[in-house]
Amino acid sequence: MSERTAQALRLRRVATGLLVLMAAVFLASTWAMVNIHPGYVWVQAFAEAALVGGLADWFAVTALFRHPMGIPIPHTAIIPKSKDRIGDALATFLKDNFLTPMNVARRLDGFDAASTLAGFLERPASSGRVRRGISRLMGQLAETPAARAVMQRLQEGAMVRLRDLEISPLLGRMLEAMIADGRHRPVIDAFINWAGRTLDSQEGLIRAMVEERTSWVLRLVNVDERIANELVGGLRGLLSDLAADPDHPVREKADRALENLAFDLQNMPETREKVEHMKRELMANPAVGEWMEGLWGRLQDGLKSLAEGDGTRAIGDAMAKSLREDPALAAAVNQLARRAVVGTVADHGDAIVALVSDTVKGWDAATITEKMENAVLRDLQYIRLNGTLIGGSIGVALHAILVLTGAV
Image (cartoon, rainbow, N blue to C red):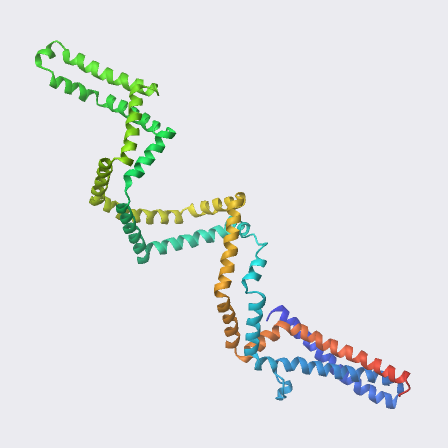
């Protein structure tokens, strides 16, 4: 039993005790008025009216929930008899006053969903629950046949889109944009550095090839060695000049060659057909299919690792920071929350109302009586107390009027 219910029961005993007291005072004052002094009529008037008021309020309060003293008096036990009507009335009240899109939208105008979500994500206890929930969800989703089927559909869709997409113009536009912004130059620099490292690592092979292709007569006078030195030195010098001079003629030729390639990729049918042929051959290669098959496994492992580690905590912290510092993101989240709630009410408001009505109708009479009586029991006892005391005061006032008018 809750403390509130215990207080209400104590107050009920007080109200009942006061009613019994008024009955005793009424009897005692009636006897005293006859046998001791007529002035006790004032006490009698108070006790009589208090007794009538207390009994009337006791009857009214009791009649709401049950038959007084078990007597089936008409229009008593109102709530048990009317529980279905109460359920419908409560559901209609909710629908008309709360569960309308306009009312919900108005009440959500001042609600900052973004700040609330950020606060939730920042709390350690909440982040722990979120992390565990995401971990379980990711693990369960990743293992389901439906997830595998979705991945299969995505793979098939990607392959179909790739087959239908002519990539040559796309590559041409990308290359053209890179050249215009100078983004191709780091690639050329990297290629030059790679060529220098390759030359250093393969110098011995180059010298061996020169020696192999030089006749034995020339090798006697070390012509092969001089040729190899000149070749290696020339290549090394060229690469050094290319690395140091961004405007080197060879670089300019490379830029023009790339510009021509970008043009050909977009406009020359022969080049476009070659690229499409290469694409088809690449897609037909079994290695590509195996790579696509392994993509889901890698994605699956990545999701599990993220969920089981500190990834979700980092995600939560990053999301909370973004919600705090990015007004545009916060406004978008608030708008989405309002639309989601209003949309839910618009789509499912009738179902929620029906749920309330059906739930109340599904309660038996004893259950609904107990729930509603416990909710207002304390207030009902104050009604009884007020009825007893105010009734007594009115009784005295009425007796005073009769005395002043000479009626008694």
